Image (cartoon, rainbow over all chains, first blue to last red; front, side, top):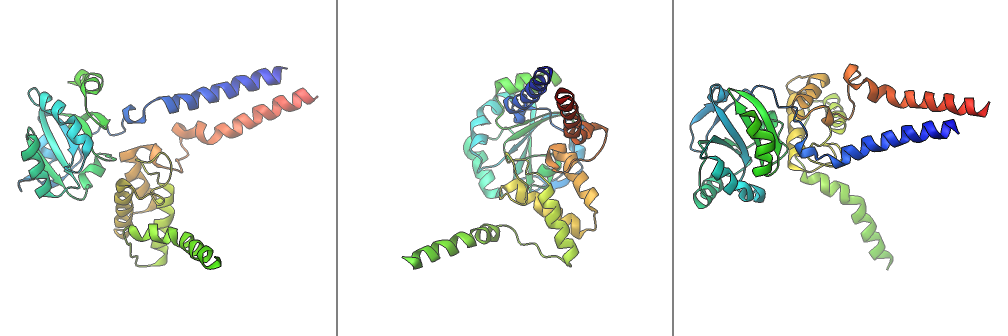
Length: 164
Length: 127
């Protein structure tokens, strides 16, 4: 009888641990990249200028991974545009054709302070990116928040605004 | 009729080859490097997928990570250094063979621990 009770208790505990893993949204769990310095990089912007990680050393910026082929990027675009009134937004144009990216910005609006061109996704991998869109809050060269997927009011208030 | 079944059978057998042919082509200097590449890509979990290694995935991020593993093998990095590179960016989640350290102690010893408890309780009950 005691064996059944203890076994049930242990199995129930294991069940709840797995249930928690299923319920918790992996996209919103704490990113391993949070708390680390912005990765060292040296790349070109979409308009052909040099840019490196030094750009971030004395600023508070929202870094957004986007691409012209990314539908969700288009969905979050109006919300990011509203944020751009209060915070600098740096784009990382992810695995995209520069012509398509420029056309996309002309069509949908360009509020980005600067756009880093990342055709191979090398900077994105150093940021632990799994796809587009993703966003990071970078304060004085340090990554303080990271979300995967669409940026919206709820995610902004929950993950980014408290760290400003 | 038999011919149709033969064609379907051969097509099914060729499916993995067709899928693989869409992936990037990796050329190695020797067999040791190649076997390291396959071992590593089977031990690194695709961060975009629900489950599965980067070797078994054609997701863009899995393709990129395979390319990174390939580049790092060619540049002379050890398996541990390559794993550390991935874990540093994607966390322990990305490692199908987590390291045996204090952080993962429960993961490694947990099953044995539970087996001992269950075994002890079972035999006590029997006696």
